Amino acid sequence: MSAGRRRLHLNAFLMEAGHHEAAWRLPHSNPRADFDLRHWIELAQLAESAKFDSLFLADGPALIGTGEFRPPGQLEPLTLLTALSQATSRIGLIATVSSTYNEPYNLARRLASVDHVSGGRAGWNIVTSAGADEAANFGLDDRPGHAERYARADEFLKVAKALWDSWESEAVVADKAAGRYADPARLHRLGHEGRYFKVAGPLNVERPPQGYPLLVQAGSSEDGKDFAARHAEAIFTAHTTYERAAGFYADIKARTRAAGRDPDGVIVLPGIVPYIGSTEEEARALARQFDELRVPEYGLRQLAAVFETEPSVFELDQPLPEFLLARPKLEGSQSRSDLIIDLAVREKLTVRQIISRLGGGRGHFEFVGTPEQVADTIIAWFEGGAADGFNIMAPALPSGLTAFVERVLPILRGKGLFREEYEGTTLREHYGLPVPANQFHD
Image 1 (cartoon, one colour):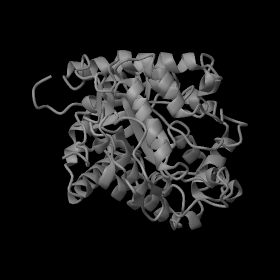
Image 2: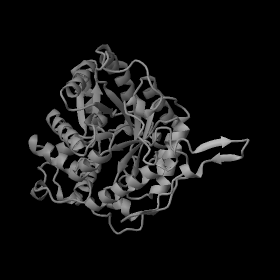
Image 3: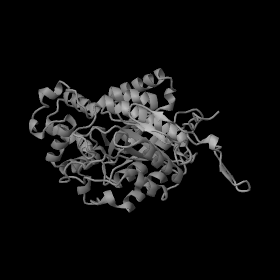
Image 4: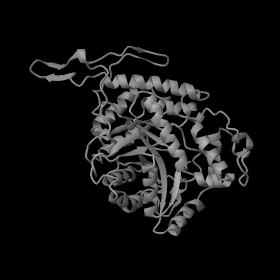
């Protein structure tokens, strides 16, 4: 790869049997993949063999749906990533963890521990948890308001960074002869007292190898974009068109610059759900196979959950109800509801068509085509100012990821856009990002 040329970043977004809601029903799928450690290890090793920057696990502290139509549970991601860290050696390991339903000290300790045991490969996808069902699992009648969740997350991250910094790199002297293990002057008490948290510190885990885990953010609301501009080092985002993706990209880079940060230090990764066939017709047939296995009732329930309403308000062969087109103020996933409305209006979709379009990637960009067409689309977004790389969201796993690795990656490598081998050992090195300075260091 020529010196100074932008590098395409690829993250393998893993989800049990695949991202399509009916993936578990395919003849070759493992319907119990969600709790099968061997399945996850094989996926991680496949992504690492392809030299992906990282893999990513989504999560939420509640059952997914009712369990009737799709696997509803998942292993706790930091536990799973710890296991995967011992079955891999280079690929980055990113977990979704909620700031709303955790405390800074315990979570900073767990994330630091994963970074240590993985040799500097941990990343944290920071979410504020949009679902009311999640709040009910923590003794709350409803989730905190949207703005309050982000305000809490802001203070949470401030405390977490201070805890990770609370051990200077020279704190441990391990002087056996003198019987002196650490220099107390280099272990820093926080004494933090804020609106949401009161934390003494220091952390009881040494500063992580990466300084702190790579910080990822996935919200595209106004609050989410402002939060990302202040803190995120990578952004996971969902767009169904190049134009929307390019607009988001320009906006987030401008906000990052306005926040006093280097825009090149924020890696924007939209999701793509690729249905890959040797011909266009073969790819379309693959997509139809998935679509025919969907259960419309599940799609209706998921659509209703996004809009915080009841499935009964929708008619399958009619457009979205008018009261939703007015974009009611939601306390949950504001950006996802806006994306669905824009898609429905732009393409004049019925509810039946909407839930079909959402079945593969929940609003992420679905692309049906040949390996060359998939690669050309990725390159167009990357070189056209809409992405720094992509979340690869295979509709079925492992088959969809295997198809991408074997048929699309060689094209991207042939154009000099993706690495042949890892050059670094840490997640920050893969993303071309430095170790953050320690705020307590002289």
